[in-house]
Image 1 (cartoon, rainbow, N blue to C red):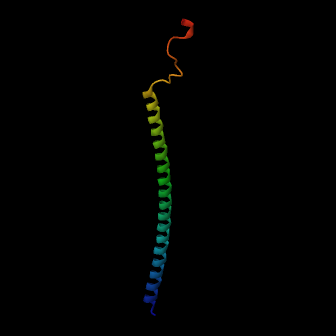
Image 2 (cartoon, rainbow, N blue to C red):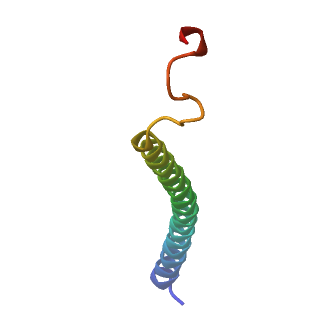
Image 3 (tube, rainbow, N blue to C red):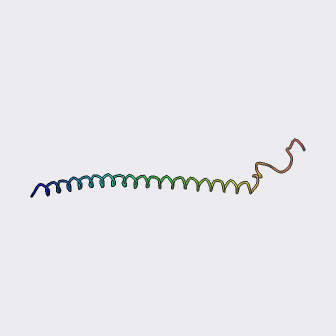
Length: 83
């Protein structure tokens, strides 16, 4: 093999190593993105569940207000001292 061919092969090997290093780095970044996306999806699901529960709680509170006061708490008529 002549010197030009040897230099060309060396350059190709270096380029191949560099490309493999870059691909490995990109693969690691993509793995982090996948993990971060999964974590974010879990966080969003938890927030949604909290908001849904809050909405149910508010609906129950409003329904309680619509029913009026509990009659056992407020007996009919004036207090006994007025009789």
